[in-house]
Length: 347
Image (cartoon, rainbow, N blue to C red):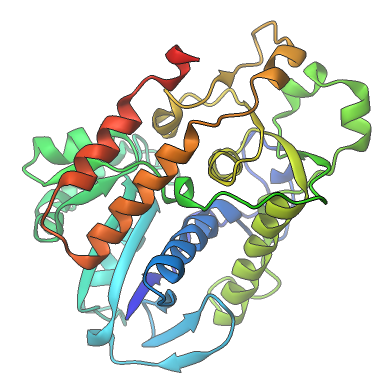
């Protein structure tokens, strides 16, 4: 049974230092929908290509939940093949505790890594993420699970330097299937745009655009299964909204940008973030910064990205090959070549 760990890194209390205007939702507890959207993309791939479902696996209890919100059941953890993806600032959740006995945790039968990323700095402890990884002996722990798909090249290069079979896989949110034409797709969406960019938007767009957020509130304790199900339901509703209603997305969110590219929605990415997460979009889409003199009309003309079909297909092919355990590395080589190709330079 294919499952993923119910461990979220992005719980925040009382706001924080983020530039996102929605990050001041104190005293509520909330998470980043991007953490769920990665697995919603994977679920879509698995259900389409393998006609299977993807379940969530609570590492503290031997319970599974369906992302289709249909069922909850107990299961022997030895029946679970755990798929790990995402930006892993908290190694104890994503790499260590979920797979080690003790402390009430259970151990799945095997693990598969797709699109993982070791952060250059641990956002809660103030330590360098790669130093933490070495202190936890992470490369040695990951060696049996290769090839390890990495969301950015810094993670790939770090793991390869320490003897791990690793490759550049990009993010699973690149793998959504392109949407069908929708006559109701008439809405401009401003998604969690950093405030410094608002001055570049026409007044009409600011007045008429819808403004969803990826900062989703947990109505209950964030560790509760019912809260996790609600979180995924909210995240799925966002993707469904983009798929059926959005004609343009203007955002500072990575996991608003990449799904839009995969779905075939025109998107403008405006962000002052400079960390390694930007690496996976370096050659795919222009990142506008607030200290530029942004020509919005020019950005609007360049908001369509037809080449992304090829990127999305390569992400899906690699995911299925890794799930099926294929030894042929052709999909890995193809994906790395595509992600390294300078599409921006050819436009």
